[in-house]
Length: 202
Length: 165
Image (cartoon, rainbow over all chains, first blue to last red; front, side, top):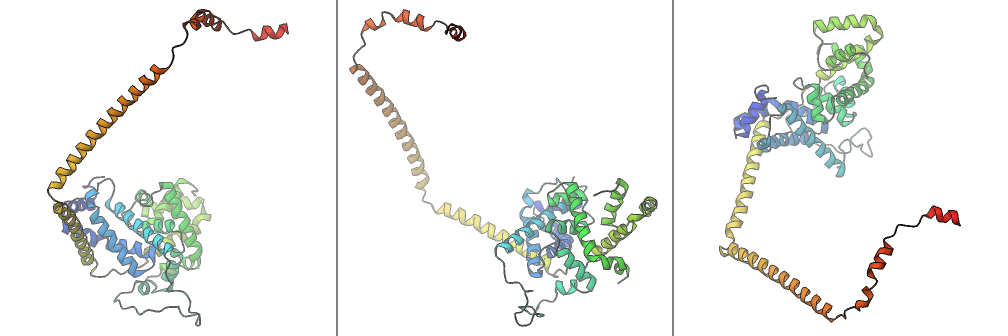
């Protein structure tokens, strides 16, 4: 892999030399896929934004050590996954009150409700339709490595080999993770996939 | 996992994207002999479509600006950290490095002298103790050669002794 083969690696080499405009280009290009991955790993919009921001800060901080040995996107998603895993570990050590926990007196109401003051609200837009909600739920129930593998499959620029590098496992193990994850999703979404609901234009 | 290499190859493509016309033809040809797989493959295609249609998570319009500000803050904090270290170093009195070097040299010299002195003292002590011991009587060495030869004879033949018994 050389910087000529991967234009992002060429940009990263410019970042290494202190070119902030090159860094800005990389952030603009990858903020959406990083945010998609991080949000679907953490299921918390505020935390996802903080972690996604931190991913790029880490990229800038580590620029000095960057070597063009593999694709830039592989390196970036590896950083993103590691930060998400750190966050999940931190959560398991310091579990906070769940916003989804049921209210003791009104079972259909959540325990805590907070006004969303932001102009955007990822959960609302994500849960726009019934089918989207079902698939998000099914994805959330998958084990972390299966979910990450399936989410990375959505990134066209990542080959199966690249996904294996991000997940730090062999190619066959990666394909097996995707297969198992998809089998679970197919089971849970059977009625929707069978009706061809997804084939209808929106 | 796999049924056959063609199926595996096509299914791995279906996991990522729509099949090309050539791939579609290959699949139809393969399905002619494996019609029982058709439903499963349709589900695979449906699931890939479903996953592709998941909407993007909204990103704040000022995301890039916030990242750049965070990077700037990190750089300032790092520079301050370096500066503080340098300031602390500069605040040290000028004579301190010279005194530290002299202390190291003196400590090394004192250790070497003490080591040398202790070895010499132990040697003197040993000589004095040995000198006090009485010398053995030379007569005990009279049969020294005979004793050495007897002790050098081969070991007895255990099997032969056992037969005699």
